[in-house]
Image (cartoon, rainbow, N blue to C red; front, side, top):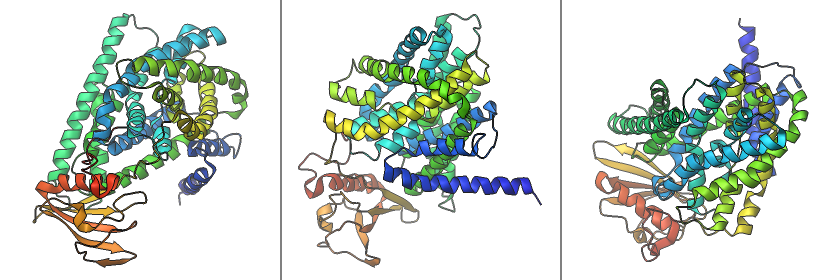
Length: 499
């Protein structure tokens, strides 16, 4: 009845399943999955299956939608107790660091490639943003100090906002405004965007904790709805929607929401879908016939970025903070680029800036080359710099379901590999009064534990905690997971985690 729709669904489903399978293959080979997605888009494009796609405006719109989902997931999974100590450094990297990177790259490509100043600064602006999807997917597989991971993740979540504003300003013809007007405009958009994110996040926390929704599946939808609302409200107010999304995501992700793990799982799945669709679409937009000529500009720009702009931006941003040279070196090397620079390169392309097509091609090639280089060398570089944390325990995940009539929460906890909960007796958990382990599921069989029941890796626990002690019980569980039964002796209370 609808052959065009049927064929589109067939191709779309096939691409999606191949992309999902590529995640496993990329993990085995140690190659970033985003490169598989870009290659998949090129393969079905004009040089492969012959599907011609050159709608820059649609790519820009869908790219922004995908970034909303990806940034929201990053905010939802960011723990406030690890984010708070690095907030100042991350904010400096996302503002001062961005400006330094733009200037250094712009000067380099102006003199090395002979580009005019406007286009040269556009190269710097497009490439100054680290990619949230690449950072989240790569760093969470490595055992690194929480401080470094939190800094890079927060930076990637926050720096999209000022970078988008600067790329848009550079892409448009001058409107006669002075430099201080443009600086004030950027400051306004960031400040109002942050305020909108706070308002949306607080509204979401209040509504979802009191809504008593009839289905657990409605909570993830509600959370995503509030993050998208934050972006839209910020955009309507001519503020930074991306910053609003990240702030709202952090507030919602750290709230005592029912079915938290279901929310995070849903957001993670949406973020993967957004990444797959975004990278495939960008690969489809690229024209392989033009990429050969972009290799030299891409390599020159990439070297200027990695060897000069990024290290200098980290060094300047870190001046007010106690950060060692080894940590600065790792932050410099771990500033991963991904889909975000390619999406940003569509802005001057849609604004018909002279030279924008060469900019897009150079950024596309640069992302492929340097993503492959950086992600495959992050682990060896971290070991060489001595910033690894091999003893860092695996984080536990606690799921919450509300027991309305009892005014209590049902906590579901699994003992993962590497957790020091393994080997601890139930009575050694020292849960606060009002919290108790009610059931243990082990090897498919459930039983009611006694005080002398010893926990094992792979166990699933059900814990009932009255509302007033729920947070204290979860902090105690996290503390024991990281330090074992003597957590308090080691000064671990399940709160802030410093490097």
